[in-house]
Image 1 (cartoon, rainbow, N blue to C red):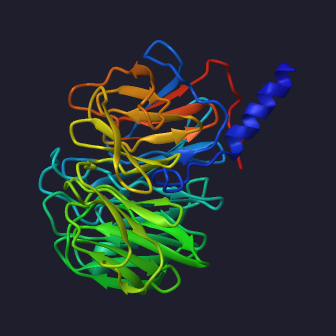
Image 2 (spheres, helix red, strand yellow):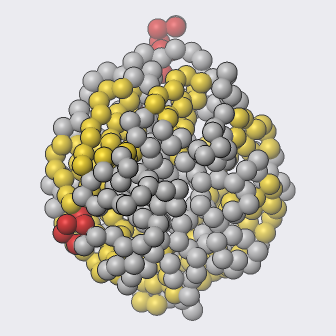
Image 3 (cartoon, rainbow, N blue to C red):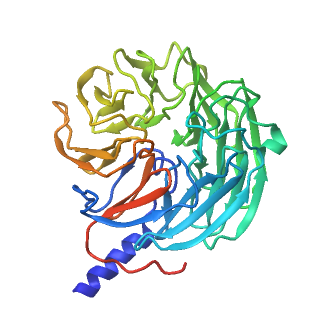
Length: 414
């Protein structure tokens, strides 16, 4: 029986996937029971120091964890590392030289912010230096691109933070900055451009959302001033909603036949009905949440509710059909990572190392427990990946695996 349980655990680990930013873009996962309680002394399975520092989330497939970071006085070194999920053992690491560097690395600019994506064929990593790489699961480079060499350097005071979007055949990359902005589709096998759509100059850190609606694969982009839908096949715009402000960090979420938008401006957290073409500002706006704001994390859709977390660390629940406020609850601290839905629980990973685990309903947050990890004052929790029975939490220079204490076998080579 013990052998069977270990074998089953290994099978689940080897076949679990958290392939990109917010997993599949929803921050929602259906997996066996996840840890409820942990601390520095309880349910920490392993810790792994990283080659550099960064703000991206870890991603994983086939029992592996991939994470990107940067290093050097001018962010001249780019790192991509691969770890075994079961033991935290380093499987390989790669170092690349950056095409575009900065004069000084500060807390006000992106540091390894874009999250990689992975699939059954490999892992793909983009850096705010304009460098993009496709590697197989053994760490061999399949292709590489120098985006700033091709299309011009990135302009702006805070750097670029948009993450790659994973679709079946293409990678999607949004470059919105003070220079010429664009949305680009890149072939995953060859690294070549499939299409490139020009956009007006604007600054944002949001990541597009890949969806299929009425049989049409499309990309939803929420970015400073508007929300836009583009066809995945050729990058042509389908519809737009204008008059949105401060939707520069929170990425869009899907809720059935509507898109949920987060903004740090009161009244600009909203729901947009899918469908239509052209300017649908006056026809497809379902609701605006008057007193709700969304700061660093993205909206979470959960059981006919939508959760937003504001800059002060207050989670606000609204009705997903009307946008009316149901309740609000102060978390232990503010968050950078988006809240996670897993079964009947919602996990809020606060930047100071504490995590509030909720069992919410329409009447209130149903707080179950607050877990704490020691995090230095200048550090924070930036993101996480989810596997059966465990989380991998990312600090600037460290991964922390939270799980149950039963041992698990090491990952086998694919």
